[in-house]
Image (cartoon, rainbow, N blue to C red):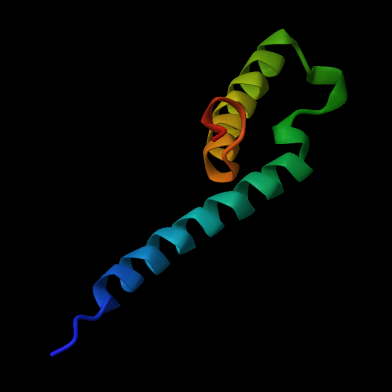
Length: 71
């Protein structure tokens, strides 16, 4: 009886869906300037956004084998 990867595929699809939802939410938040109007932006907002950027850079570096994750 051949082995199947049905369980792994189902788990992969579930996690992919979760990531897709997070990306959609982040895109919507970004389109809304992360909830900040230009006249309200302060250095705290910059620090928060920089933190988000660093985490996303880490993820994209891993996914695309760039930065410290380059081959």
